[in-house]
Length: 299
Figure 1 (cartoon, helix red, strand yellow):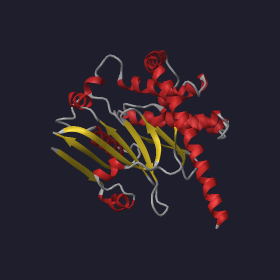
Figure 2 (cartoon, one colour):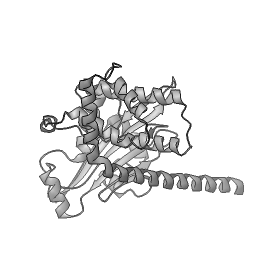
Figure 3 (cartoon, helix red, strand yellow):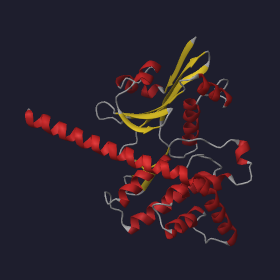
Figure 4 (spheres, helix red, strand yellow):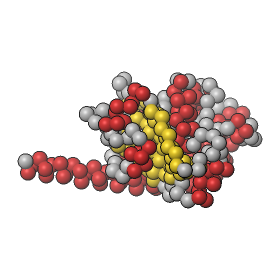
């Protein structure tokens, strides 16, 4: 027996219908759109909006075999929430607490004999925002200019945002740079938006290493290829409220560095994949621009 369930924020129902994203079948069958991320069992599509409105990111998890469905059951998806719903609620929780995140607008699932066969989360595009890894790669490649003063402002602004979130006891759980979007706000100052939220469970928070040390280690391992030691010290001073780094705080920095090592190889692969997707999408944008120009010339 197959069952399907979808929950849509009422404010977005008409926009999702216009984009063909208003039923489980239409979401899971979607093949057009720009691929923003991909792995063996997960993909993320960007679907443009209609009439100049922001588009949507559709993150889909597929469990095609009974083995993968059983693994999901052991992780709690049989009796509890699937991954799309869990992330939807986590994002809503952070938003309600005043933490800037991407806006979740819908989630849904398809189950077979109540085992999750596929599930998804839909979030609204943040116009002109880039994830921090892409932003840093563009700066390193000379595609984007970043003056020293703007660099210092960006570092301090990110540290202040994370400091506020952690100071409220709020966990993101997945604080790699690819999960942080950045853009310039109306006043020219950096604005950040978090995505791919997986808050740490209580039992994880109670383990030996402080939970916020683990999250800063995730941020560090993403930052290492693109930042200097001075950048990182500036970040930590701001994170700790602009105060000097006392010996106890320096001990925390050493713990953050040790903790980051466990993700280094994995994050290096993710950074390479991020670069590949960015290159593919730039090529696609160039091809679309040339096609549009040819069509206009022909007319």
